[in-house]
Image (cartoon, rainbow, N blue to C red; front, top):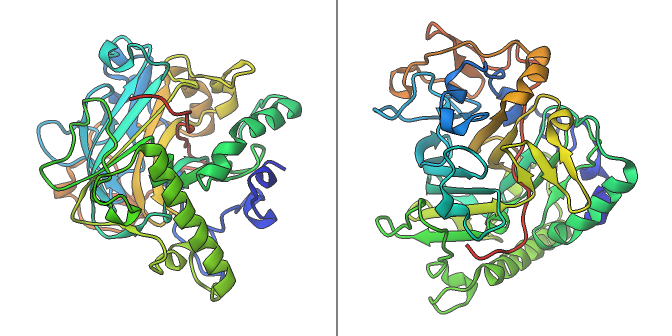
Length: 395
């Protein structure tokens, strides 16, 4: 099976509740995943597609408050969720506060300086501070969908693609489902998935509008004497720490009822601290969102019929999905017809600022009149995804 190529257990590779997030090890309920709380699909006339230079692509923050939100201020959009492409924007979540920039190739407003001389089609950077310490193996980046993929390539091609990404799965502790699963996913520790990572003192962080940089000199536990190491060496050393911790936990045994997040807060793996400014940068050349197609090396495929109305999403979450680091959806106008046939579109044009909204838990959301409703009610199945890991390339 797809999972066995990556040394995954049959339990973790199965479809359905493949990660045990809907029901804990002791049968206790676990909070819904971010894709289950995603907003309904946008309208073609919405602010998500309001930037002419970005059409036919639009970015959106989803789910919304209280899991994540755009801070109040002049730059905050009226709908509270639409995001700009090609320029930095501020955001805040239950776990993280900072800013991000999503560069996309092939659009009218694509900055040539970002992609000149490079094969990449997407470059994405996120920067900020954590609200609490998080173990590095507990924070995942990747893809997680609420519905199955459709119109997949033939099985022989799927097996070939599996072998293509096999080395990445082994190298970056990637956890992935069978591509035919009811809820496909591919997730890896963000500290391994990121092509570059910067850990800086407040006020000394890099400019995310400039080329990404690797700066891990403050992570002295990497054993570099405070001088820092390259991205490949950082990945190699942290991957070994994570593997050793996984083996130690397995040998020690995990008590019944322990959630994935709890088992990872045992001190075996270093944590992202709350004092430093962390910057994670990613890029890849396989997915072209301007056409919504993917190049697997053995052929190019249209993602619209495969995604079945679900958008690609740049996702970061804790391993049990109880906390969101960020989730930014990348929509294409060609997705909307199928998306609207699955679910009524989001018609809310204005949402109150986070500062003016009442507090609530992650199951709440604002209605068009500012009242509160359950964010999963009437939403049925929701979208999701994130860019796959790409080979090393000079930033």
